[in-house]
Length: 211
Image (cartoon, rainbow, N blue to C red; front, side, top):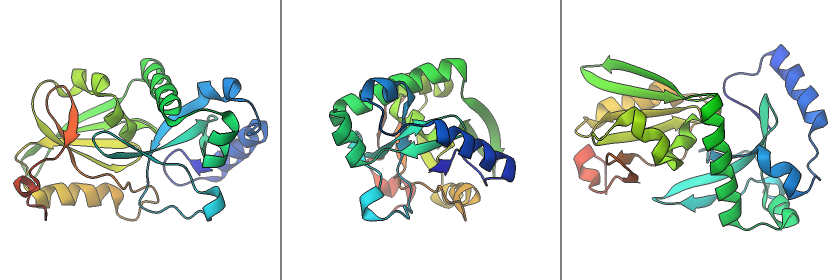
């Protein structure tokens, strides 16, 4: 289990324990399905092989896992759980995205616009699921409009949108400012917003990235 963002203080720890006691991992799919959310893959996953989370590649190449949202924390979905539920990856992903789509109606993303070293930045946040909005382009469209941008997802809670011609050292600085030392730094490549879709970055040299 992992707290939904940030350091776990004693009060949060108590709430997590209380909620975890009520979580039934042996419950059937019909009971668990409403709690499933997409969870993008972290750089570091300190789990033994038998309890490692499941991850699938979602176009355009976003490594995506899943979590059972039980309030103050999530319980990662493992291959063993998926096998027990008898669902395939397509159904798992579809259910998670529909749950996320409903969640953001009740809890809209936190959008912040600011300038950093002369660059216009859009920050899109959501507690534990902000980065997963990369999987919902229809939710990003009202925020980002039709201007092409570079998208970074440094940590679970956050997407950073930058101008398409951003200098890569500025992008790296922003990534490090959020992800350095964080236990939820993500293993997600930079992506591009086309104005209607999230796509692979394409010409990596345009950002000064190695091929």
